Length: 239
Image (cartoon, rainbow, N blue to C red; front, side, top):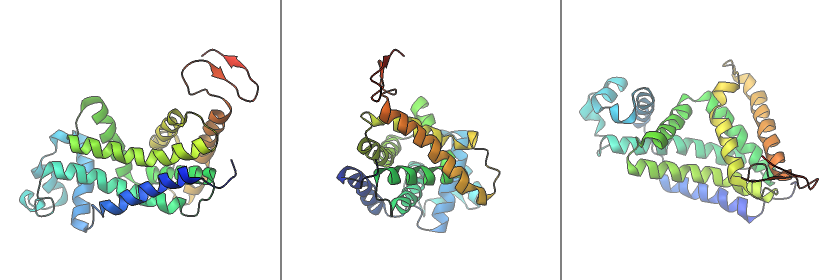
């Protein structure tokens, strides 16, 4: 577990970097960023299909036709751009967080820290998660937006999966799903009081929680359907 990360983890990290470079910056101007932030907020409050250009214009203080100067294709373009913009910010922070990581565990811990801090600090992180979760249940996103969201989540989670596999987790996908769900729900269990000086300690608590799940997955195939097998003790038990 302490060894240098192998090609698998580094390739997953590089795929994310290449994708972000190809995206450009979806929120490249202050006006675009304001529109995208407002859309995420309104979509979370009213539903994606209920957000009109007029409603969005009122939220950012401009006439609805002026929005087309920034997003010529209208609302569907804004939906996709809002997902891209939020992930571009998140992915860039992830890459910065793992820049000095060497071992698989360092990659794992760095991603957990970044995710936890951004989830607590930035309201748009929760709004993005809500849009994606609602789409899973009700199909609210346009097809391009859904495809973008799925691809972006896969790029993020593939680094965790690669690192976990290198540390001995034979079936990393269920583990990563649990850890990501834990981090996405951080505002519900973390108890942050809004004081940014407390964030490092809260991030370390998240690292400990995610690390505990990781250690369990390394020693016991508890996240795989069927009997639970302890690799250390050779004991099999039923769920």
